[in-house]
Length: 627
Image (cartoon, rainbow, N blue to C red; front, side, top):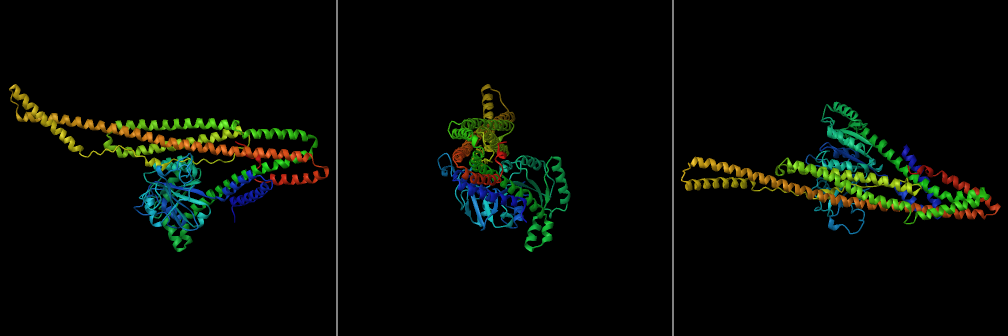
C-alpha cells in the first residue's frame, strides 16, 4: 500500500500537471519553466544517507548487508580511503569522480559541472563520473590510484557503484565514508562538513566496546547538522556481550541528550540469510529494524518534504495565473469600481517593472550583502587560521620537529580542515540570512527553497604540500664529528699552551679537558640543529597556512559569486513573472470593462470556475510569504 509520502507525491504530481496545462493555455512561458523545474525536482527522489564511524567498525560490510550485495570492498587489509557512493542503476556500473588538476581546469568565472569541487558536492552529485572496471574498484577505494590509474587524470574525489536493488529504487543512496584516522581526524571533520547535504546519518560502532567520548562528540556535532540519525551496533555475532554493550550505548546517548535509536545487527547473518533465503535468520540479523528506519524516517519523510517544496511552487504559479481571472471577476462583479481597480493594477505593474531594473532596492541589498560577506568570510577564515598558526608555533617551541613532525602534521591537517569546514558553515549561514534580507526587500513571496551546496575542497586541501622535510641523514655522524673536532682541538690547544708556558700537562688531564670541550661542542651542535628544525617548522607552518588561506579564500569567493548569481536570477525571474502577471491582469480588467451584459454573465461563470480550480492547487500563495 502506498505510504503517506507516496500519496502526497501523487497528489502534487497531478496538481502540477494541471497547473502546467493552465500556464501553457495562458502563454506564460516563464511559469512553464518554473513548473518544469519543479517537476524535475519531484522526479529526482535521491536521498543521500552517510555511513560514518571509526576505523574498522564494519561500515562497508553494513552497506553490503543493506543492499545484500558485496559492492563495497571488504577485507582485513582494505581501508576505505575514499567515499564510496552506492546508488541505483539499471546496469551494474563502477565510476570514479575526479577533480581535475589545476592545469586541466578551464579558464573563466565558472567551471562546467563536474570540474569544480564546489559545484560537484561531496556526495557525487553534479557529474556523470568516468566508468572504471570493477577489478580496479578496490584499488581506487584504498586510495592506491589517484590520477595515475586507468581513470581520468586529476585528484580522485569519490568512487561510485550503481546497481539495481529494491532498496535503492526508493531513492536511497549510501555514502560509505572514510574511517582512516578516526572521528577526531581531518577525515572526521570532512564527514561533518558534508552532513548538511545528507538526508540521514547511519553511525556505525561495533559490539566490542561501548561508545567512546570521541564517538559521542561526533554524534553531538552531527546532530546539529542532520537530525535523522541511527546508531548501528555491528558484529553482534562475534561478541557474546553485545546486549550489554547496546544497553550501555543507549545510556551514553541518553546522558548526552541524544535521542538516537540504537539498532544491533549482524552482517554475517544478513548475508547468510540472503544466500539461503532464510527469513528467520534475516530477522535475527537485526537488519529489518534498520531498513524500517530508512523507510519511515528517510524515504517517507524525505518524499513528503520534496512534495511540500513542489506544492509551494505550484501554489505560487497558481496564484500568478489566477490574478487575471480575479481582475476580470472583480470588474464584472462591481463595474462601478472598475476605474479604481485599473488604477491599482497600473501602479502594481509599474512597481513590478521597477523591480526588474538594476537600481531596484533588492538589487542593492544583494550587491551590498555579497560585498559584506566576502569581507566577513575572509576575516573569519584568517582569524581561524591565525589561531591554528599560533597553536602550532607553541607546539613547535616545546618540541623538536625532527622527532615530532609526523604527529604535528596530522594535528595540523586536522586543525586546518576543521577551520575550513567551519568557515564554509559560516558562509552558508550568512548566505541564508542574505537570502531572507533580499526576500524581505523584494516585498513579495521569497520563501521558495534555495539550495546552497558549499563543501570543503578536500582533494585540494590534501594536495597542498606541507613541507618541513627534516631529512637528517648524517645528523648523528655530523654530531660525532663535531664532538671529535672539539675534543681534538682541545687536546691540541692544551698541548700547545703547556709547551709555550713550559708547564707539562699530563696526558690524562689533557684527555679529560678535551672531552669536556667535546661535550660542549656536541651540546652546541644539538642546540643549533634544534633551532634550525624549529625555524624550518615555523616556515613550513606559515607557508601551509598561507596556501590554505589562498585556496579556501578563492573557493569562498567563487561560492559567493555563484550565490549572487543564483539569488539575482531567482528574484529577477520572479520580478519578470510579477510584471507579466500584473500587465495581463490589467489587460483582463480593461477587456472585462468593455464586455456587453450578455457576454459578461458567461464570462463571470468561467472566471469563477478558473479561480476555484487554481485556488485548490498546491499551497495558497499567502502560505509562501517569507518567514
